[in-house]
Image (cartoon, rainbow, N blue to C red):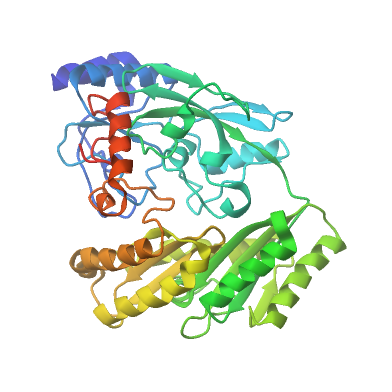
Length: 473
């Protein structure tokens, strides 16, 4: 049966695009090298019709499918398990920009388009696609939508879900749903788009999407501020929202340990203002101004002056040009690579009401320090929308891999319980994958889980679409 299936797949999409045997590590290993699975085959369809043919063949044999975009996920959701029975369906060949409609402010792209290329295509039309992630040079729009990615511009433009107007999806039966609508209003029944966005490939395969575009800001201003505490960071956010209203596009908080790992691993990068001791942190703030010139720059400078006067910040530097703004963002975007260079760590992608973040950081930090003296808390993320990357690094001099394997379960319980106690979520933008699938039932209401399982059974009755991710069978 295995040989027959591979022959069928090769006949459907071409022998060069069905890889079986040999070195498949690039598709089998996750981005952090935490795990490696074993694939029955890797298939690389070049069209939606190809994807449908692959799914139909797999459905006929009951073979599980693992959809894969750029394989940049952090929750082990896009690699096969170690059974050697699953087909990895890579969308990497489906990179076409099908249409840009400037008048409707939309673009339609295939799922394998790299996010950076989507942004560049929009810019080439004089428009903005605002989804921006540190991994945008390798992540793909299909994966972004399948995980409802967030990124640094959520505060102004929303998550991937809010940036998507329509989808094309191959269902678990191998049918093609063409929902590539550029409409902003369509009240003709259930919103099928929202079922597939954020479903992590467990309900169907996203093959294309119609995305929202925006006019480019007239001017963009960026600043880096030293902030004495997380409470003052929240106060600074409120001040910036009052002063800049809808123009505030990015508000990133960066803790002192996050800066220290960057300084250690990338000494060539200049950190403009270091964080102080204790609870002190830095904020990277950006605004896309609706007007350019001295008036817009003056309003941004007035915000910085007001922050210093109010005690929300102790120092501030404003980027004078695009190169300086990129240098500030490079420090922020280097945190994850710096952590990876230091060794495996315990990652948390959490969301909280912004008002409760200072209490969470203080209480959870104290609890972790009590449990693991010398533990380093690498805290950074999108404070503007309440999303923190709360990563727990081994104490200096400790073996990182041993720390991960020995402490992960206990650390997760401390962090997730503290999040749940404050009305938060244990997965803000990375998803559940297989890494959190057994943790989710502790924090998700039983009624919600029951509804999710009913949807899964209805849309994927054979359980062939990325099984064991998000929900256990």
